[in-house]
Length: 466
Image 1 (cartoon, rainbow, N blue to C red):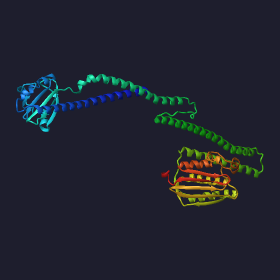
Image 2 (image 1 turned 45 degrees about the vertical axis):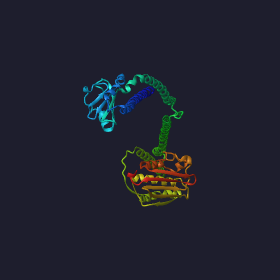
Image 3 (image 1 turned 60 degrees about the horizontal axis):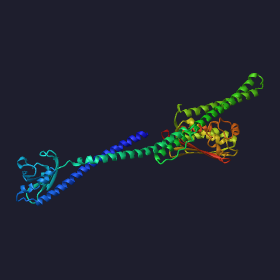
Image 4 (image 1 turned 180 degrees about the vertical axis):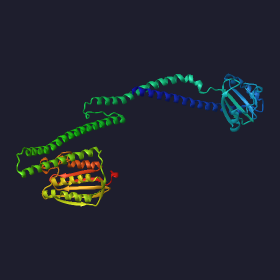
């Protein structure tokens, strides 16, 4: 990177110097040409006032020969028809008509003019300046050797070359320091990242004077934190999976052990009483039903997570479904001495009927289970901004604040003793959370111990809005 920056900087420097030299050459040549033209024009004005046009013009010009010969300059007097009246460097009969000369044409039209070209008579580059006389119908034209800015190049070249060397050396030093100030922070960032040994919170970068590099350092810190959070999330999910398998194994082992024990007693023939046999059979059936419910809940969570199973959608009338669910839960509520209050708008949602049944049933069932004798449960359903808003509130035992973040985990129970006594698989709220996520909805929980809890679910009314 250092070498690339130095090379490009030096190339840009040389390019800028060359361009600057070219511009200086062109502007200098233009200024020199204009200055020389103005000086010659002033000279012609002086001559115009001193020449004797009515007397012997040739003799007047002969007096200027020794001045003109010294520097190959020449003075020409031209009639308006283009013929030459007199010339200090040539015979008139050897000269052709000058009316086609550009400087002569400009002098005829504008009063003065100039042109630069190679003289056929002298064989050198000349500057021609013409002036229309104010005292006679003639054109005065002066010509001097003119090489432009090129004659000064041998004098300027050593100074220019020295300036170039000084500029190159100075720019190299400045650029080298600039590159070091840029690359050093990047090297520090690289060294700091190499120090990391599994702990992505150890990164620490000093801020430099360049905001762009500070952005890199800050972004690296954020990426490090994101990686740390991601690894923590993976570890958390690993622990949740491990806990899930452990809890699932335990939950399945309990009914299987009961079934096996009752079956072995019946098989041994030790139980002869028919009433006892019927009781054992009833217990076996109850444990089998419990195990079937647990397996069904696990399968439902698996399908919701995988999102691979075919789901049949239809228009579900929530008021009708809620009435059926409340009727089915009335025996449970009566046994717990809990009163249910239902307030539901006649709304319809495009969803899977069984999933809506599971969602509402689990929320109301939990509100009944974790309540007190004489407690109450309020169920409210409304449509707001294209969403179905379901609220289930109770005045039961409530949920401790340190458990609010975990109540949707599989098999998590706030009060394990009470949960075992009340029955259930421990997967109800996990199923609720998965169903809400399946429809791209949201669920919020507010609770206060010994005061009750409120679950609020927001679901889109149609799948297009999901």
